[in-house]
Structure formats: C-alpha cells, structure tokens
Amino acid sequence: MGDDIPDDHPRAASLRARDRLVAGVEAGLTSQQGLIAQGRGEAFDYLLGERTIDSAALAAEAAAATMLLADHPVISVNGNVAALAPEATVELARAVNAPIEVNLFHRSEERVELITEYLREHGAPTVLGVGADETIPGLSHDRSKVHSAGIFNADVVLIPLEDGDRAETLGAMGKTEIVIDLNPLSRSSVAASIPICDNLLRAFPRMIEATDRMAEAAPDELGAIIEAFDADHARDAAIQAIRSGDIAGISD
Ligand code: PTJ
Image (cartoon, rainbow, N blue to C red; front, side, top):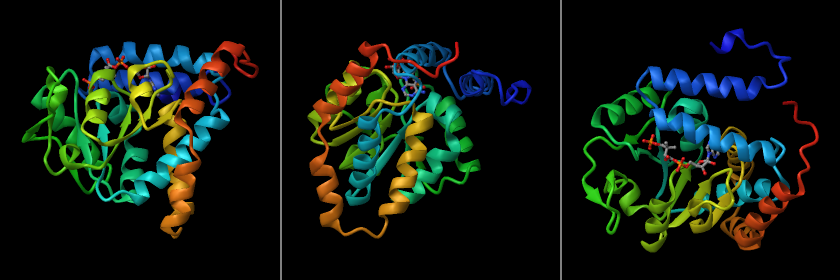
C-alpha cells in the first residue's frame, strides 16, 4: 500500500488518501460507502484546484477561534475521518481540549468500538460513542445516537465530512456547527455556521496551526476573528472557484 507510491507521483497525495480508506475498510473502521463519499469529495477537490482557497483558510482560522472560545466543543468522527486523519484528529482534540465522539451513519456497535480503540491507540484522551445515552430529536437514523457528555450537550460541534441531515438538526438544537466539506452546496455546508470548503487533510493541519498560534489570544481577539468571518461569502467563494475552472497546477 502507500509505501509503493513514489513521492514524485503527480497524484501521490490522492493515492495515499485512497489507500488509507481502503485499509480503513479492510480493518473494519470505514464503511464501503465511505469509498464512494471519498470519490465525491475528490471530484470537488479537483474542481477547486486541490488547494486551500483563501476563504477556506479564513474559515479554518475562524473555526479554530470558535473552538478555543467554546465552553464544550466536541469533534465528531466517522469511519472516513478515522481512517484518513487519526493523528490530526487527536492533535486537534488536544489543542482545543475537546472530546472526540464517534458518530456513524452506517452504525454498528462493533465499528464504534473499533474506531474508538484506533483513536485511543493514536493517543486520544477522551473518545465517546460507545454506550451513547441520548438521542437527537427529529432524526430518524442511527446518527441520532449521541452521548450526553459529548455532542448532546456541546455548544460547538466540529463535523468533518458527513451526510447533511444531522447537520441541519444540530443547527436546530442551537449548536454552532463547523463543517469541513469539499462541496459548498451540500446540506452540511449550507447548515454550517462555519463551512470550511476544503479537504479535511488540508483543513485539519490549518486548524491545528491556528489554534497553536492563537492559544494565548484574548477572548476579544478571538471574537473579532469570528465576527469578521462571513459564511455566505465563504460558500459563494468556493462555488465561484469551482465555476471558474481554474485548476492550474493539477496533474491528472
Ligand atoms: O462512517 P459512517 O458510517 O458515518 O459513513 C460516513 C459517510 C461519509 C459514508 C457518510 O457520512 C456519507 O454517506 O456521506 P456523504 O453523504 O457521501 O457526504 C460526504 C461529503 O463529504 C460529500 O459532500 C463529499 O464531497 C465530502 N467529502 C468527501 N471526502 C472529503 C470530503 N470533504 C472534505 N474532505 C474529504 N476528504
């Protein structure tokens, strides 16, 4: 797997991400549907030029400020996130002092346990999800199963990559939602207070860098960064970038 991909291969990053997901499926962490979701994400990434556009960089910074200011931030993780970025997920959770909660669409208790164990092996201090004891009202599928010490009572939830209806429902519960989704038109992006239209493999390191940089910042300073962020503008800028067709620098 990934070791066979030469660094100078024009699509090395994309191929390595695919390998991580295939390994995730083989290990029972990732659903087979997760491979399809990755393919959809890749298509948007290609159209965005496989780069972080300026508005997504600002979104990542506003997201970091929001998590630093939160009383009870939570990072929601599914089978794709666990396979793609376990190290960065744990690093970010430590940087903003947030528990991680495993919350799955294609839920099985076995997969929740496997992902929990995998993240613990990567150093996660708190991983919730096993024994979820609360239900998100108005959501008919298994994503409604959440933890009282996690998503249910969170004020800010970071949702990297998911299907859209839970994002809408969490918004209706009054939570601030930060969504990482390459598709600016997705229901998750549209429901988000802070949509980060970027690949999570680029967004996570940016958020970690921003939290490190702002760790000592005063609440006013963080508040000003959040205030200056415009979610509609960020989504529009991503749509514009996709429509412009400027994918210079991409090798197919
Ligand atoms: O592990 P589970 O059971 O919770 O299932 C997870 C998946 C991802 C299968 C499930 O949530 C799903 O079906 O998601 P969707 O509806 O396919 O939505 C995934 C969204 O994430 C799409 O809008 C993709 O464009 C986007 N996406 C995919 N890969 C990435 C991404 N966004 C950012 N970074 C990526 N690497």
